[in-house]
Image (cartoon, rainbow, N blue to C red; front, side):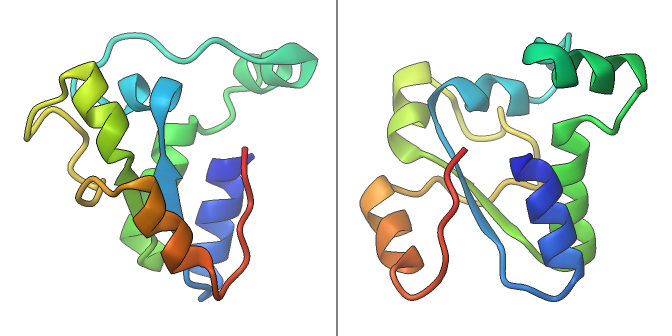
Length: 111
């Protein structure tokens, strides 16, 4: 849902900033094999019907709508992620405090 909202929001001309953290980051590693496991019945249906994967939706949000997607700096450190390990459409790592401060004058959705 976060990827769909980010891509539609960005392509519609809205400012979109996504903060990726913890368990999400491994799915944004370059060359990662395998998809994220489907969540629940709707997730299984999405997989069966070949709905666009969330990584591709996030990439489209950046490429077509100018969204900004930042990995959590603490999660990057915890996971030992090095420069160049993450997909190129991701921005620089950002701390949670910075992310919350940036969002203080807008709307925030959490997934």
